[in-house]
Amino acid sequence: MTPIPPLRLGLNIDHVATIRNARGGDAPDPVRAALMAIECGADGITAHLREDRRHIRDEDMARLKLEIAKPLNFEMAATTEMLGIALRVKPYAVCLVPENRAERTTEGGLDVIGGHNHLKPFIEELKHAGIRVSLFIEADAAPIEMAARLGAPVIEMHTGSYCEAVQHGNHALAERELLRLKQGARRAAELGIEVHAGHGLDFYTAEQVSAIPEIMELNIGHFLVGEAIYVGLPVAVRQMRAAMVAGRAKAVS
Ligand code: PXP
Image 1 (cartoon, rainbow, N blue to C red):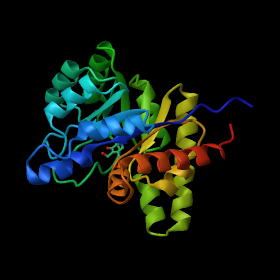
Image 2 (cartoon, helix red, strand yellow):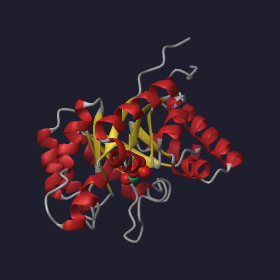
Image 3 (cartoon, rainbow, N blue to C red):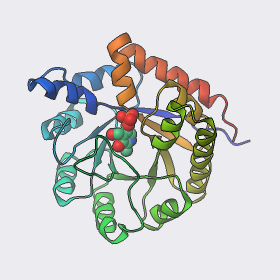
Image 4 (cartoon, protein in one colour):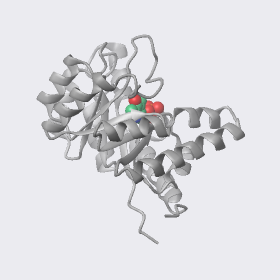
């Protein structure tokens, strides 16, 4: 049996900024939340600088890069403006995501097949700058194989459909979606791609997904920021870590 690698927890702090922006001032500060989460065991921080700056702002990204001692994962759309900002900020990683102005959150995976020619130079330029590139895609063989052809070292599998099925109590669909994630993770690992996962995860779904041995990192935001309202961010992060450890203990390589 090969040893199962440890699983990292990335906290997505976008929604701390959403609350701050509701009043237009400086509080709550997403950088303070990031520092606190790291102190409590988060392995990295994810932040999405959207084109409309609805939560994270340019100065948040710059401060995160300066002030946190763990990897910064810069989520962005593949646009010339965002590329310029990423090359200036130089985060540890960039996760390329689809972006649609009207959406409430990132809705589906990146269209790596139709978008191949558009994405390729972005991936190359980011890699050339020493930034680890991840593509946020659906857990299907075709986009995973295209991610490999595009030279992406990392993919993040979209867990939204699985989490929604669980939330709606649709057990049959949830099982199918979990199987899709398992098969996707296996295919990506065969192709030498590091596998991350995220979107919509809570304690239960994070525990289930943590049992997939090829997954190396979970990126979780909305649920943890919401949970922090009840129990505080340190407790929420520690409880999430405990769920991930419990799930990982069920992983079989
Ligand atoms: N990963 C990616 C690529 C995302 O776009 C998001 C949402 O911004 C997340 C993870 C976190 O999703 P959630 O906030 O639902 O936990």
